[in-house]
Image 1 (cartoon, one colour):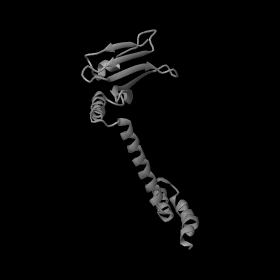
Image 2 (cartoon, rainbow, N blue to C red):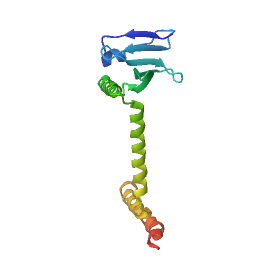
Image 3 (cartoon, rainbow, N blue to C red):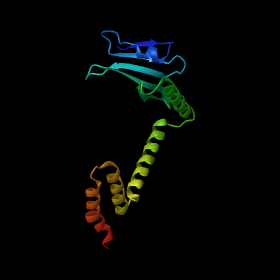
Image 4 (cartoon, one colour):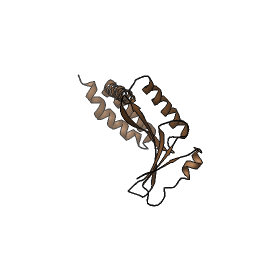
Length: 157
């Protein structure tokens, strides 16, 4: 059974110094002001290190949602509270935050695919040539290969 604790001192220093008691595998610390925002501290099996994860637990349309916000200290206390408030606002408006995230991911994937499809072979050769001039010490050889083999392909039509 996890140990559930509440902390009034919710500072980076105090959260960094928290240790899991011996025999326990999970420690949950509730945010003092934002209901549902928790910091779950658990043992990671491989490596034996401690993982601290921000989680928002909230009821939405008779479902209990557990939304992972991020890992502490990569996501700061301010960022986690800001994200939790945004998510709670969406839920209060009747919008499912999981659907919003899915739509954003779909849009990002479509943008990436479109950007990939927009580039022509000639542009790719030009980019390779620019890259080799900057990063390769023997750029003359790379440029010569691009001219001999790559540019021949798009000049033939």
